[in-house]
Length: 226
Image (cartoon, rainbow, N blue to C red; front, side, top):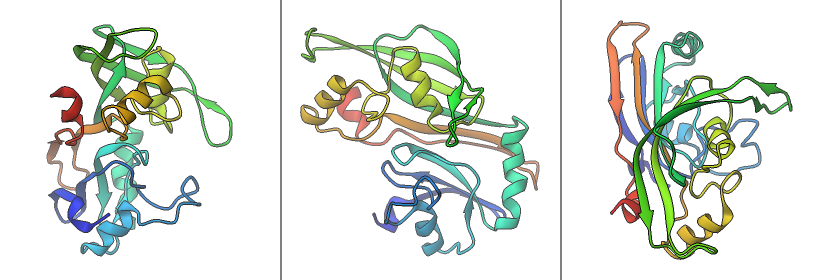
């Protein structure tokens, strides 16, 4: 991983918004305690923001927009946006099967302590695809490009909820379909998770400016989308 891979898309006196590549941890937390590798936070600090701290999280395998406060003392001001439902986060995901036009998943998700917490995800299907991929017992496959919006912020929430409605995210090693994952990896040469945080919108807690950013899909998506 090199510094050139980290794009800074927005910067002011208080925060940064960057694009996290797939397969990079945000920081060394309890969940990543056994991973000895450079984190996104390490790279951001090496690039010139030595006190930068992430305001929220993305899974290691997920790509996309993530907000950093330039100093630890400002993190809570930005986190209140999440706590008060005043920030919009939208993800794009490639799901197995043809998903209905729109809907929501209201299903508890287990936290790190083994306790179930209420979790709500809204989704909207953007496009259906049919592909001539031979994955037994079928010779053709169906997929959907879906925009997913987490109303709550549980760990692995989108991945769990996609699986809950029987439309798992492609290349999800934990909650996905192994037959489709193997096809994408072995036949298409794509190993990355098809989950991307593509839009972030909020009112700046210090300036009251309305911030909205969108980040295009990573290049590997083009192998499937064409």
